[in-house]
Structure formats: structure tokens, C-alpha cells
Image 1 (cartoon, one colour):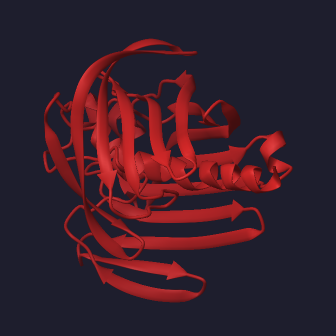
Image 2 (tube, rainbow, N blue to C red):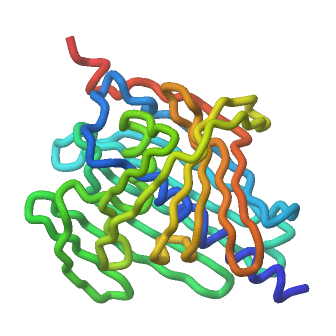
Length: 267
């Protein structure tokens, strides 16, 4: 039983943000600020489960700040095991991504993980002008070349939501820097489907992606994400098939965001 709970807790800690990493943007232009479907104050809360076992919750938040006098979005993700799973394998992960408000290009990714007795911290700084990423992990600093406007494993979710809606039958790709390497991810629109959640009932576009790498919290494999078929493009449900079964996330709370201050202050 302890072994099963350990593996279940680890799954919830590893897969959530990586699952979001396949909800990625395309090579198209992002929406202008006034058309973006998210803003400061947006909050999404998910229930994480392994088959029918509820293992914890995950939260996505949007804030805004300044970095070197440049307006930025601060995207935050947390995943935490519930009291039952924590008795066997406590999981508490915090991810913070900073992106340029205008281009949504990645600036910095800060990862802090606790999974059982294991703790990991790492930071990636993105130089979008010099086209390099500086990864710092366990005190070691490594520099890697990156493509233009590359995304990290959290910012890509919001980048995707800022693009024209994916159509059924369409496949698109994006450049993502993860684990010291650059990857091209492909995402495909599968079909339209009605999804019922505690937040409400939604018309959605069901998408899929086959992931060839282990992302921030992701094992290789097929991932399915349901985005609302409206201007918000909310990820209301996610599902991944892994070695020990099916893990899923379902939206249970939603709070809409406000326009950024930089936009609100514009004439």
C-alpha cells in the first residue's frame, strides 16, 4: 500500500505542469493585450486524481510585476498532495514563470520541488536577445542556445491561449526549452466535446500531443487537454496515460482576471 501511495503521490507532483507544457503555442502572432483571454488575478484550481483516487490539488495564478522596468506577467503553479497521500509521500511543487507582457516570451523559470524526501531547486534565465538559456541546478551553471521567443514549460500554456483557436484536424508546433534542451512539440485538434465540471458545463476542443521528453513534471507519453471553445480558452480537463494508469486534472474553481495595469493606464 505504501509503495502504491508513493508512486501515486509522485505522479501528481511530476505530471501536472508538464501536462500543461503540451498546451503550447504556434508560430503565429500572439493576441494583442486587449484581446488576451487572461489577466492579473486569474486563478484556476484543479482536482488531481489517479483513476478514482483523489490525490491532491493544483493551482494556476496570474500576477503582474516589473523586471528591469519592463512590465511582466508572473505565472505561478502549485501542486500539493492531500492529507491522505501526504502520509505516505508528501508532494509540494512550486513553479514560477516570468514573461514579457508584450511578447509573452519566457524570461525566467524558477522550480522548487519536494517529492517525498527528495528536494530539487533549479532556475533558468532566458536571454531572448542573445538566444541563450542559463540553467542553474544544484549549484552548477550551464548555458544552452535557444530559438527565438522560446517558451518554458509553464509559460507555453498562456502563450497557447493567446493564439488563434486551434481547429479540429489541425496540427501545430512550438519551440520549448526544457531540461537543458530545445524541443519541438506538436499539438493536434481532435474533436469538439461537451465537458461537465464543478465550475459548469463547457463546449471544448479536445487536443492531443505526444511528448518525447520528460518535462518539469512529466513522463513521456500521450497527453489530452480540453480547452473551452470560447475567447477564454480555459484548460478545463487534462488526462495522461502513464505506466501505472491514468492521471487526470479537472477544473473545480475559476476566477477571471483583470486587464493589465499597463493596458488600463493606456489612453
